[in-house]
Structure formats: structure tokens, C-alpha cells
Image 1: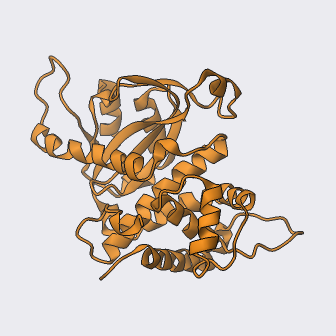
Image 2: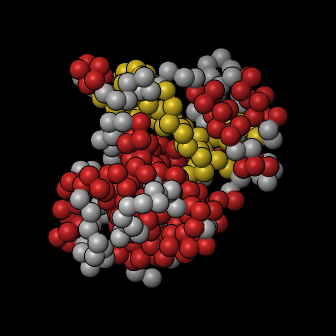
Image 3: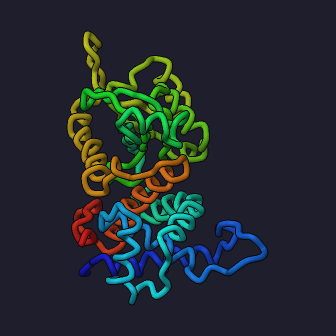
Length: 304
């Protein structure tokens, strides 16, 4: 089957619209008085996914692009402030559909998970750090992979080897990585309940006896590289083949979906823009899987 951006947008809109009709309580709460939105939530979220896949970071530019090129798909047009306000209010919906689309694939039931964290920079200059609305949430951290300090947050992503997101979180860059992951698992214990023999693959940064024992108590086996002067751990052959997958998922988010150029300036803005990109990645994997594409994480058919 031939796939392109309009095909994905149509399939995604139908999926979201059907889900919202079946579960109207998912819709964002709105005041009793006032105007009824003409643009539906399904159209809004489909717009957001298309914006990420087309790699248009500026909302003002995106609104102009919609009016000129996609009016046939979206007859109702929003101003930039209206689009921004509606999108931030739809953050719970975006989070819900990341999970809903992931669950609608065979990959959701994979008992091999990949875990990694990556910087989400929120500012570089000192004046930006001092004036930013993200101050107090974003902090200075260090990225060992790139040997650099940054001011912002860390995105923790647990996904399958195909890159399908299972769990994600944005956290203070100074909080310990293991502490964040334990909190993520505590928040959703049901995800582990039906996955016997779950294997969690990480890098050396998650090495700690207490953390490994905590995972074992949850029924999870940790697979990570050996540290210096450490005895040979089992599964190192498998690890070498999988480690590149971890890096390639982050490369998709940063290289093709511009994760680090999100443009968010507030708590809600940053969270929404990160979730928007994760939903775009999930939607592409979901649609590629449903249409039988050979490379499920490929965005080539949708980026133009």
C-alpha cells in the first residue's frame, strides 16, 4: 500500500475521532458559557502530528502553511494564539493517544524494553536562564554522551526495540536517572504485571546494585554494559546489537523531529511540544505497522 502524509492524517483523524466518540469524557473540560469550538479535538491533534512530521517548528509559520496548502483537509483555520492555547489544553489528550496508538500495535506486547535519557535544552544564554518561565523546573545538567553542560530537562523514554514509546517523563536534569525510572515504574505498576520475563536494556549510567535489585523485585531483568573492572555480565552479545537501536530512536526524535528545537518557554509549552513529537513518532510507527511497511520507524513518506 502506498503511504503519504495525507493517508496517515486521514487514518489518524478517524482513529482519534472514533475514540473520542466512544469516550467523550476524554475531551478537555470547557466552560459552560462561551463559544463552542468549531475545530474538533481530533482535527487539532491531527494538525499537531502533521506539524511535527513536516518539521515546521514555528506555530505562526505552521498556521500560514495550513491556510495556504492544507485548507482542503482543515477547512476551519485557527490563529496562532488560538492554536497554541488549544494545543496546550489538549496535552492530556495527546498523552492519551500516545498510549492508545501504541496499544493498537503488536509491538506493545514486546517483553524487551529499551531505556535511555536525553537532554531537552530550554535555553543557552544567561539572560534566558534568568528570565525564562521554565526556571525552577529546568536546571543545569551534564550530557556525558556529548561532553557538554546544558540548561533544561531530561527526557526519559522507555520504548520497544522498534522505537514505540511505552513510558516517558520529563525531569529535572540534576535528579538521578535511576530515581526517575523507579518513579516512572511506581506510577504504572500495571504495565509490568502482565509481562513475565521482561528485559530492560540500558546504558552504564543505570548501573547500581540497589536499582538492579529493585527491578528484580518487580520481575524485570536489567541488561547493561559492563563497567570497568566488573565481571563479565551475561547477555553482552545481545547488548551490542541493541545499543545502536537506542541511539537511533533518539536520533529520530532529535534529527527528524527537532526535539531540542521545541521552542517551548513555559512548563505547559515544553511538555506539550515534547509530547507532540512523541505522538508524531508513535503515529508514524502505528501507521507503518498497519499498512505493512518494512521499516516501521521510517518518517520518509511523511516529511514532505
